[in-house]
Image (tube, rainbow, N blue to C red):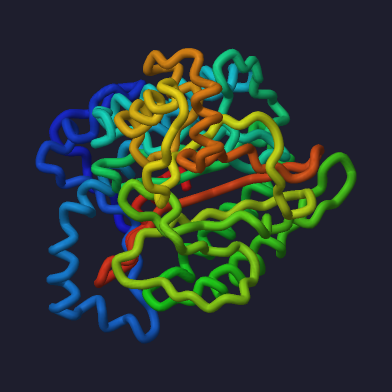
Length: 373
């Protein structure tokens, strides 16, 4: 594993409060974990042409590495700070305020890429508390912290599982190893269905004993990793976490979020519960809107989020009030898509790990790798 470069210039405070670009004023941000390509792609490492192509992508890489360094510093603080008994909304808002500070958030140029997921137990993804939610983190909860940063729309998407009771360790370990398997198998020309098969094989080699009963750990078959493009969190290609049928290959220059989810339940999620996450539809053109409120809200979304995901708390934070009917109109018109919580069966437990990587011409760089995971 490549060693991180020492911080240049200023040192970070505790809790972190200095924007990353001030810590690295030369913009020479730490590289992620650099992995050589294997097999027939090995000659890429020395190819002059490929090295030249790598240099062309230098600005994009700097944007990505800045976001990744902010993610590392924020999550490593949060991992030490979070305790059972804290309100989920306080955990999210503390994390988001740290992200905004370290990213030196500015409109849609830089800052938070999507709402902080903090889904609990049988809920695997897309839950964040709405304003007024009183949910408290418990000692026996399994919490997935999924948050993102971006610079100029270059999105970093990375997640980890937080648990306090060590009885969940086999579940957490299974998912961490499955994600690392997905990362290892990724590369230029890698077939996505083969990556899914490798992930599933590792995930489902684990089992867990809870309250005297043994459960097989299953890959959640209808959740996936995904390609990422500027200002577009899901850019069209899915990385399955079970055996797939369709043969689609990874390509040079692509960015992927490699994420896996394991469950003690059915290994399948359904939409359930109150929606918090929304995102403007990337492909829909102008649609006539009946009310001024809906038109105004669309302008607010375009100005503050563009095509990045947002949640109701983010609308509250920028002073929007009485927007629920307008938001419903935007959803009904197909201009904004809702993303409800995704849950396995009640009583089950789910875990997640995720990293963002880029398939550089000369190597694969796991941008978000850290000392923690």
